[in-house]
Image 1 (tube, one colour):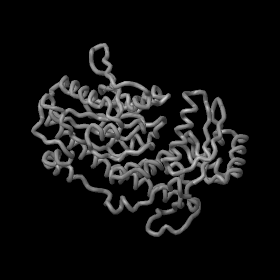
Image 2 (cartoon, helix red, strand yellow):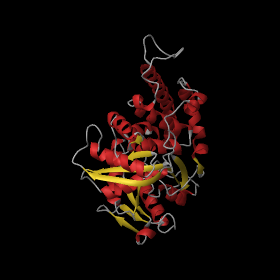
Image 3 (spheres, one colour):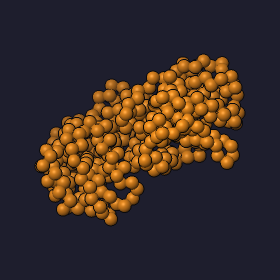
Image 4 (tube, helix red, strand yellow):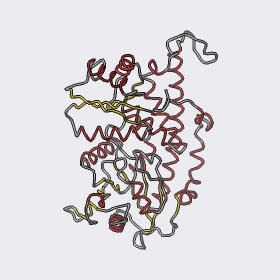
Length: 409
């Protein structure tokens, strides 16, 4: 799908890096960026975000390049999106919708799909008028419509009911996660979570440390579902649980942060965060700041961090370790792809685990998949989990309609 990208420089942050990231996001969604239109403004235009003259310039570019979709590098209000689509006579997507679309394509697990659907429906609820052509007309909704409801009101009510059901299902899954975490707490297993900007190399590093074989690709948001593995770190520490989580990005939609709370809570309850940074990126400091903002939003900013400077082979750096003023390891420089410095990271994790309050040996539990490790402990809490009514059947969850992807109209 041929796409025109639009970015407005409001004088904040690295604008060039932001536009480059938009191109990566568009490609990750399956679009082909054909042209990029930029401008400088002090503030957004209320009606068109870019102003009417710039909107006409975008319209000419759409005709000249046979554009099929226009993607903005910003969050648009429902009114701005409707006005632009009416003026340009083409589908317009904002940054939030683009990221939601990528998440919808990447979600693999049942829980991941539920979380993405919840975020999509919450976003769609404010944009019903522009999304579906039948909404402003009275028409037969046999068995669905309440007394005197328009089709728009019916759709809003149905979306509200679906959102409520999804939240209940995710609440049950959240309880199951808590059960699993309690089992790890009882064994006093040291827990480590990998966090970082998307495409920083978290999953590659996770595979290098755990040999887990998690899907890795040079694309944004290649991994959505949290994967946990136990790794034996020697007799002094025993087994350590390491979790790979979803990557972050600047201006990550709040709907996604809220919907993925159950997944991100693996981060909240970790004993140590390995904050993976792309050492070769010219905007790595800004990316570190963006990740820390999301960590603060989910309540994980108090957890100790080791900054893992990955991709040192591309940055021309040597594997090494840096310590803070308290002699604790604060940075590890490595390459997950080549394996350089990975042993230094393992040593750093061992050092932190030995110093953790209540640390003890747990070699009684063999290494392997978390499911086997948690099976016995999960049985203790199974009755409490199953007491909750399941509001959504699996078939209902899988068959429910979701908003269109980038590649559809």
